Length: 111
Image 1 (tube, helix red, strand yellow):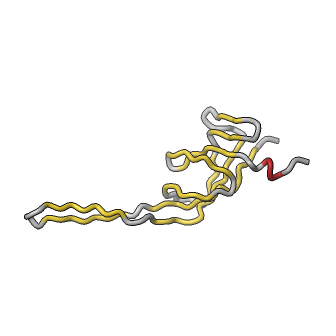
Image 2 (cartoon, rainbow, N blue to C red):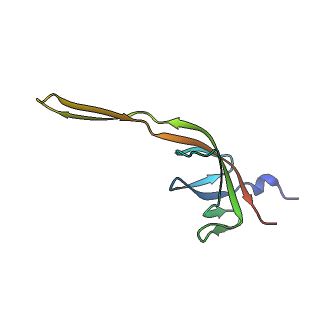
């Protein structure tokens, strides 16, 4: 019987929010805000121990399950305009919202 940990030791390239990420199972990272709690995404590329599967555009027999853990705000970014001798000044700030996600599983649907 093959070692299960060895089978789960592969990488995938997925797309979230218009950006591509190289992920592995159990990894946690920040992405742009996502409104849903659970996602099932087909990867564009899967790297196994002995071969690489490239999709056209997606790899058909694999699915990545992604779970959104929480929403996080970034540090405040300040934009300040100033013109001397006129009393003109404007101050604006913004905080970008990110989602903290975890890759739950990378599943092969082959039987």
